[in-house]
Length: 438
Ligand SMILES: [Zn+2]
Image 1 (tube, rainbow, N blue to C red):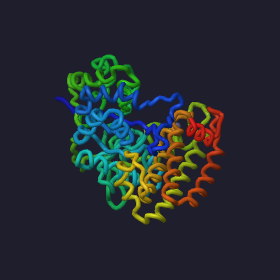
Image 2: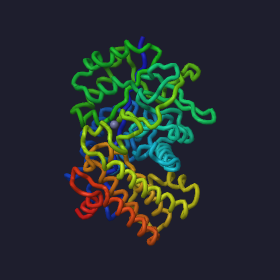
Image 3: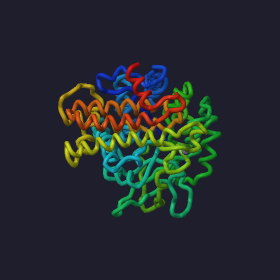
Image 4: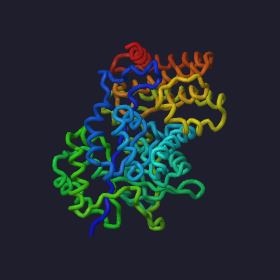
């Protein structure tokens, strides 16, 4: 008898260009390459054309979809049309959610739901957290926004009966009797899909999937989820491999790919458990240290800049929250969430105070993007955060709050001047200045 398998893809790229009209020509790449365009040709386009989005579950971050809408609107619309059936939710942009305030978590999670609904007409049920980074407050905000579940790595969940949580959807109890389902993916299949050769899908299934299928009991789900860029960007012809895997190799082994949105549970039979606070799928060292300091993930390279860098980005973002609270008042979060796509995606300048304040806030939130401190070399992605931080100040100035902005800018620049990037022998401020005057 056959059993169900969920194969999921995580589609994500950071925004590579700012949206203020005076900053649009600035490249954040050291070799002036637009990687989203390159990966679109190698991966996003072939995957869409071969019909993967009708066969696999997927999450696509709006920060990427916005770029696809500009690079190739036809391809973007293939993604949009498949979202209702096979898509799950995301937070629009890609900050480490547990590092955000409750108010900022609410803004980005709600902005993602809002856009998902605009595209599909329905609310997303399951969520992919950036880097699967979670804490209890993030899960509370997910439930506030109508989510029933989220994807994570198996080592992020401990079941109360002490069993490993691989592939076992697990009920996590929250405050006031509320609950949310954790969907841990299978670490072994997901890693093999990401890193092993992708030449022959039949052999791949025999080597890596069938042994897992035999090992886990037949009443359990099998969930595999991995970066979509694997197929076509990291591995040439990965689109064809994946298509054959889903259509032929898996069914030949008695495994039938289904959408994660179609999985039904008897809640009373679900395992219960708890999450490891401040954990993720991409750093095993605890407390989300990879994005905030020094850990084994940097393999001995200098990452001492990460802590002051993120602290400075948070300082700016928190100051802008205070300004918004003062100028717009309590409840500004909803106003931002509802306007996120339109004020982010369209570069029409306006003199409207609220529009400029909201764009300043969106910019300072994008300046929290996790890619900056994922790598130990700030030259890879930290420039994106620097550019968006600068854009935040620009929009604040255009909102007419010049005295306030001048004071904030002075403190911010002083902080950037004290952050040293040893890999490029330069301060964070010099890197920003060089980028602005390229
Ligand atoms: Zn680490």
